[in-house]
Image (cartoon, rainbow over all chains, first blue to last red; front, side):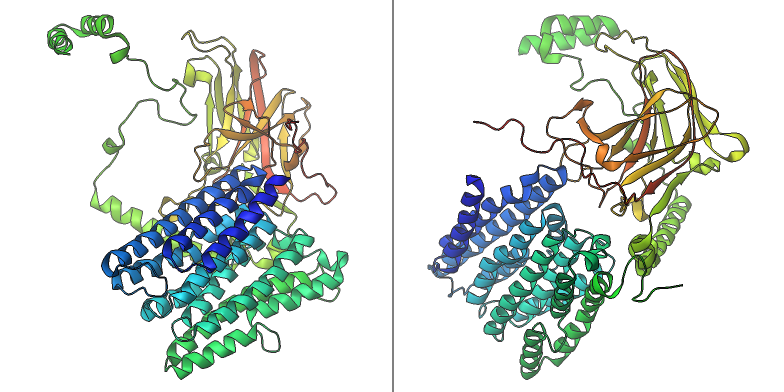
Length: 312
Length: 303
């Protein structure tokens, strides 16, 4: 009982340390505290799959933290200062880009994310997708002027593509949410070199939508697609809300999820990157497919039929 | 150290067993010939220790054929992926309540299973498998013999088992089953009254838990009538290396990665046994509400 309090407080502490730091070592310390604090939360159920998820998480995050420290040390070696906003050495910038991509789960460093999310419970998955993304996004925001835009754009487009394609055939809701997370991260990183404020806007709205989805799924304890099908009888209002939230995650126009996408596309077109804007919006159509499928299973069908009306 | 080297040189001039004795008596535990692991071999493993590089057969034509089969498997996998989860359309995945996993109608169905007995450790039980009458079932038969092999380290003996081969996809990658829609195992058998144990082995990924197994018992009636045995997955208990563990957890079926299912008989009774299996399938029993049959709350809480 006290253990959960300690872990939650450590998470908050780690996040606060990272986002309020000016020195690279403080940022790294905050990241490490976050990693270590969430490990027991992932492996709380002592199932071999949960332990496996915790191991995978620890290995990737530790590597990423080590790379963060390495890039900052490299920068300090060449420029003599440890300030986060003044990252000037090109190799440090490169290594930091890959380290932050690993921390966030951007492609091509995304392989751990679905498995880790699948091995943890729904609430821990929520923490992993939202709270654990906060420090790296902050670091991305603070170093956005010094990171290589080309690499970021490529990684973002590949993230959106992979998140969309790999999410297509999933039947486990946690894995679907993991792929949605990867897709949204792609949208966030494509704009970070041009207008970091939009990244933050996207991130906050994403946190809002994902929290709503995760908590809704947690209430109905839906860890797989077939469980979603019976929710219309149990909590019809939650079902309707889940539909709206899922469509918002997909980015459909009258809902909130469309706002960051619209602003990002506008900003990208202003920066004369209309090809990237087109590609990324087309790739998010794939995401739309599986969100729609989730919504279809949950709300639009009345099981045990697959349509909305009674078949003869 | 020089003495040891001299002894080694001297010993190499003698014959086989003399060298053995000389080394052992003087160097003792330094050069112990005992293996660092027990002599138990997993069922289905080769008897002779052939080194893996001796298996390689460098023939160009065989390589091209192998590549062609793997590419066609890959193409089939992509098509299955496009159709829906598990290769079936989504509506089938959402609505299905039964699924037949293995049925025994031909020899190649039998090849998907590996039989083994305690002959691996030196015992005397025998087990055979063949297709039953009219190719309608598989017949697993043999003799159980509980005589302990005299190798000084085995205490019990007498078991026979049949395990399914894990399914590999293209390029020998592991293929994962998704059994999350179902909650019961459904087996149609005709036994002879002996109790069997059903084991499920889910392949661990990063952990070295190659010995963990979920098992439950299957009691057969001896009658001439076919029996349909339903075992819910919530009843499978967790054991590792044969010992039932204290903190139990239910078997997770979602990734059910690289799963093998096995039937074992080991009821300490000498004599012949027979088991006919028609098919093995999965069932989603909506009336079964139990999540897990064993206590999962903390039992040894420190005060």
